[in-house]
Amino acid sequence: MQDKVTFALAKGRLAEKSVDILEQCGIDCRRILEPSRKLVMSDASGKFEFIFVKPSDVPIYVEHGVADVGVVGKDTLMEEDRDVYELIDLGFAKCRLCLAGYKDFDMSKSRNLIKVATKYVNIAKDFFDGRGQNVEIIPLHGSIELGPIVGLSDIILDIVESGKTLQENNLCALEEIVNCSARLIINKVSLKTKADVIKPLVKKISDIINNKEN
Image (cartoon, rainbow, N blue to C red; front, side):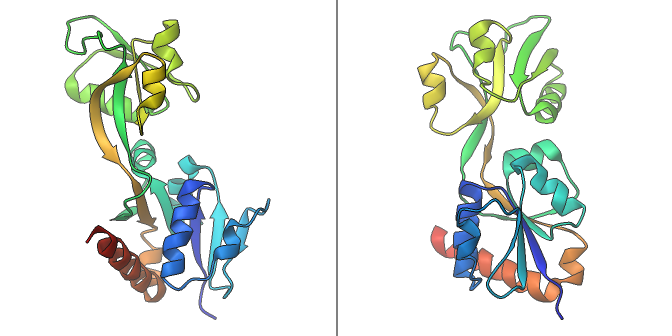
């Protein structure tokens, strides 16, 4: 019997959009999104398996081969820096990874230390190391915008979608680091050992995304 192909998905919008694309590829996985506490599910054919994990864990499961395929945001992929193939920009879950704070904060001014609150610790370290800028990185995992408001940090590094949350807290994007969106990632070994299933699937997904863009 042919080996199953396992997908790592994060419940929520990423999973919903991913399932929509997989449905267009001919995989009947509508029941995957039905209310359930199950963490492992299969499609109607039993050929594809889905595991539901935290967004930041998707690259980890794929790197270790527990999952063959994953869908993850570019921001998470950059932060985790896992040894996987990033094959397709899926074009949804778009956002910007930005430095943000009060509009009068001057990023270029000479100072000994800038305090940066973020959950993207590795991205922040790489970014400011590349600039040779002296910063203190303060790890936060919720309500990052509070950093400048309560004086914990000078600025934050976070994803920005509409910018409404920043605006409502009198903050603004000071500098854009990178545009982000959902990416299809593949385990490096699986791409070889399960090529007969994965490569045609990747081609179908690529065609769907290209047709949407055109």
